[in-house]
Image (cartoon, rainbow, N blue to C red; front, side, top):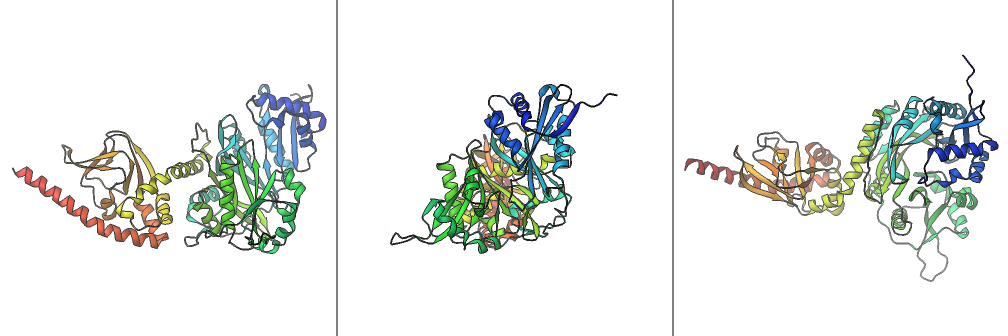
Length: 547
């Protein structure tokens, strides 16, 4: 048996042309990250202290067959967090486990240097996902349409822990209910107990007064740094940069801040009210929020709202991402109200004071959630489906809320309360003739029609007794009384309906008694009318049968 000619080692400058050829052979001309094809950029990567680049070399032919890297500055300096970057192998060298060997070599290089390793695997095929799984990475999130290649693509987010990472984890995080499902799956995948405490009472940051806004200048630096003590004590947002890293590093990372100052009636320099740091990736058309500096809550929500408006209308962004502390339910609730959804839950991701804290990765899509073809390994499928379901539901949420607002059942709800009810509804579509309700069957759901019409019929002959149109509801009597349905309901044509299950309804009422009070009052008023109408139809049918 001959000596293995393949050697995995750290890259040196003379490897750069070979690395470039690997990237050229792996990615076609539509690949947007052109830096991977440039000699100067690759040389910088080889000598970058915050990046470990490995190569797989055939020592007999002196050919570079593959490359892989770890980026060690994706978090704050103390987070000991690294991202396992692009792994590429020449097409003709595939099938010999080079990808697996490069992954293991990366782990060996950094296992004593980092606490947490993360990797994003593309969903066009399962190959990289399997490599991550086979080397101890577990799925903890699904990042929807995060990257701009030929089309926007989603990735699966994996984590691997080293050293004392999990023993330093702060337990019992406090999260809002919208985080629960993703957190449960992520903690379970990591082999950790579900020690999350659900916070159903924390209110979002209130809308504040408007502030003059501008981008960070050198004159703002000292004023913002003076807020240091309050900012670190209540730190809620995490990321790879901080203001004290200085203007040079901020500019190198293409980072910027929106700065809010107190209104000044006389035009003089006014005190700083707060600042929000973000990185704009022009290639991905994405925004990452990495730091919120504010001595009080007054400007926090305003800054977030201003950045979202700036991202959509001036930066032409499609995706906004933020990492928020799993111990800050008030900020989580604020982000939910601003349209962010949970996409990942990362235990022990950041180091804060003397412990590692869990982080919730949240995102807001500024494009329709059209995911296209996605290929997932079984370990990632359930979590990805949860995230995709939530984004698809959110996309029709305004229609659902609008439909709810036109129903007597939801009369008296505030806009925020209507949005909350809509958020626990799912959306179903029915083809012509398809049954929504079958007489005699038990039901756990009520329907609110967003568009289309439903025929209501009685008996084996399906005698039509009425119809339900967009903006109207059906099924709530059976859902509330737990009695079988008395009538049939079938789609007259194509129908889209919001669906509220009894389980979701009862959970919502427990979480929000204020909403429950309004709904039960309206149900008591409306239920009598529907029962009276049902009795009238039944009596009429009985009379007709005697004639």
